[in-house]
Structure formats: structure tokens, C-alpha cells
Image: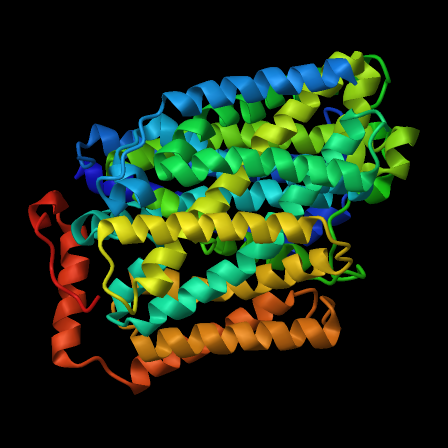
Length: 72
Length: 501
């Protein structure tokens, strides 16, 4: 059972990544904002956040699959 | 000039030593075309990066970041999303590649759709679309040599010199084949993306500390993303990211990376190794480009940002290293392109209609690479003002392979009629839209011609999948293909299932 839940997490994470990278109203909202957080513009934070999320999802997927001995 | 060229020479000499140590092995075409599927995760990761990020990253995308700002980050988004695709495709593509001894992307199309003609069509689209980018890569090298010669070379002299250097490099690509490409990618990748990233981070620190540049000092326009009120259109970013992520795996020289790995585990591990490197390298390059855009010297020539800032910050030594980094990245792309095209000429064009033995396949492959090198070298020395437009057009065209490729891998129902019709119609629609609207479709809300054509493409593919059902025999064959991917140990199919080659 734990493997199934891990698989679901990976799939859901990949789908969420796809959504946040491609959903236009999301980047329209961010793109309009001129706000700065800790000296960083909102649009930069948006791109870096989705990039880090994609990176972590792939690392998690590999970690999960190699632990479950599914990869031969 | 002596300093910059001496640094180049040291890098090139190191590369030649590595290539000379590789044993030439012509025992099978599989060895020549995909390196006997023998490479582990580290080689795979670096080989993927070295083919994915060409030298033009430092000029075209560095320049875009300097001139246009944050929108350039779309390249980071799609470059990472494409690794998810790599992760998802790894098992089916590698398994079918191993079991059926597939060597090229058209081989996979022929297997999945049980058609010989689809192999030819896919190969022709891939080869034709790749040529403009090969020529652009060679010309970018010329631009680089012009810069590091400190103005002592004219543009024509620099292009000819760059072509000679890259043509000499191809001697080893032709001689050794894929093993030479992957092993040299490792060396070139370390130089381009490890040394390159270290330089980029150092230059960002220099821009912030010495030049006092930060995001807050940039023009607000450079920090905004095109939305509904922009001239680019509301779906512009969506279109760039979608076509970039899907299109990357349609290039034959990228796709063949899936066949060079020694297993699914290595392939997935290579994705896990490549993705953080890709994130750090690409993000550093774009941040560097954006901040450099505030320099007056860069404003006038944004595409030269890599050389201008390197020279300003570190003099001739750093300029020489900047040249080496760009050369290493460019070589990885050009080698991969030429090698994959040579394999396709032998395997998918000539070998598709004539029975060739191993020796003949390798000879035709080498001959094809030689011809392509000569053709691209000659074209690079000509004045071709519309080449970049052709390159963009080629991209809109090649992404039409995405629908039959990805749906074919993940959906059992698609058939050869849908695959051939969808990519052919999609290709024609993309070309017509591009020719009529020149890359700017006023009614498409920012969608590119390739993205609009993809909609037509997917409609044709799905419609024909339902209108022309597979025969029972074909259905069973496709079911068996998918069943072997679902197995935990697909190696049990080592003898392979037959299909019409």
C-alpha cells in the first residue's frame, strides 16, 4: 500500500507542475504584479518556484522508485 | 588574441586526446548508432544536457534575457518540464529499443505503427528540420571567433575558421559514431555547464557587487509576463512552454539519447542527475542575462552579452574561457545532430528500402555524416538572411511529430493512418500559417503556428483512431507491445517480437 500512495503523490505532483506551468490565468495574475518580496520581483519568484517544484518532483519520483525496487 | 586562442587550443587538445583514446569498434551498427546501449546515468545526464543546451543558449537566450527580461525564463520552464517527459517515456522507449534493437526515432515509429513508410516520412521531417539549426550553430561559432579574435578577423574569416574547427571535430564523430559523441559530451558538458555555471555565478556576483545592479534597478517592463493586454497575446507564454516541452523530444538527436542508456534505471537516474544541473545552469544564465541588460555596452549588442561581460569583468583570460564554454556547448549539439542524421540516412532512408549488412550501414552512415558536414559548412559560409526564420519554421514543423510520438507511446488505440495523416497535415498547416502570417497569427491570442497546427494534428489522430479501428491482429500486437512495458522485468523478451521492418 505505501507504494501505491507514493505513486499517487508522484502523478499528482507531475500534474500540478503541468498546471502551474501552463495555466494562463495564473501567470497573467503574477505577470501584472509589480510587487517585490525580499528584493525579488513576483514574476521571478513565480518562475523559480515552478522550476524548483518540477526539479523536486523528479528527484522524489526517482527516490521513490529506486527505494521500491521497481527499477531493475 | 594570443591568450584567448591559446585557451581554446588547450581545451581542443584535451578533447582530441580523449577522442583518440576511444577504440573504434565497427562490429555492429547498434554499436555505431547507439553505442551498444552501454552508457550509465552520469554519461547519459551530461550527454542529454550537452545536446539540449547548445552554444546559442549563451547568445540567443542570454541576449533575450538581456533585451526582453523575465519572459526568457520560459526556456527554463520547458527545459525542466521536458525532463518529466523523459522520465515518463524512459521505460516504454528503452524497453522497445532493447527488445527490437531500435536505433533511431523513426525506428520507434515504424515499430509502434507497424509501417515502413512512416519511418521514411519521420526521417525526412527530422533531417530537413535539423539542417537550419546545424548551420545556425556553425555561424554562431563564427560569431564567437570574431569576438575572441578581438576584431582581428572579419565576420567571413571568423565563420570560415569556425567551420574549419567544427569540420575537423567531425572526423572523430564520423570515425567513432555514438560512443565518441557520448564520451566527448561528458568532457564538453563539464566544461560548458559546470565551468560555465561557475563563471555565470561569479559574473552575477560581479554585476551585483561591483556594478550595483539588482532586479530593483531594472526597467519594470522587463519584469512583466505577457498577459491579455500585451501585444504578444494572452496565450503566448503557454504556447512557448507547451511547444518547447513537447518539441524537444521530437528532434532525432535528442530522442536517440533514450536508446544509448544501459537500462531504464540509468535513464531515470540520468533524469534525476540532469534536472538540478539544468535548473542551476539555466537559471544562472537567465539571471546573468537580465542583470547584464542594465549595462550600456550590452544594451547595444544583447546577443554578445556573454563575451562583453566576461571581458569587462575578467579581461582576456575570462573572455578566452567564455569562448571555450560556448565552443564546448556548440560542439555537443553539432556532433549529436550530425551523428543522428547520419544514422537516419543509413538506417531509415537507404536501409528502409535496401537490405544492408552492418558494414554497408556504417559506410552509408559515415558517408551521410560527411555529406551533411560539407553541406552545412558550405551553407554556413553563405549570406543567408532568412536562415533564422527557416530555423523557427523548422521548429513549428518538427513539433508535429509530437502527437503520433507521445500518443503512440502512451495510448494503444492510435493507428498508422492517423499517425501519418496527423503529422503530415499538422506539418502542412504549420508551414502555411507561418508563410501567411510570418510567425504572428492575429486571431490566435499569441499561439504560434506550430501550436495551432498541433490542435489540428491531435484532432486528425484521434478521429482516425476511432474511425479506422485496428484489425484484431494489430490490436493483439499493440497489446503485446504495451504488455512488455508493464512487466517488471522486460528483459524476458530478449528475443523480441517480430514486426514488419
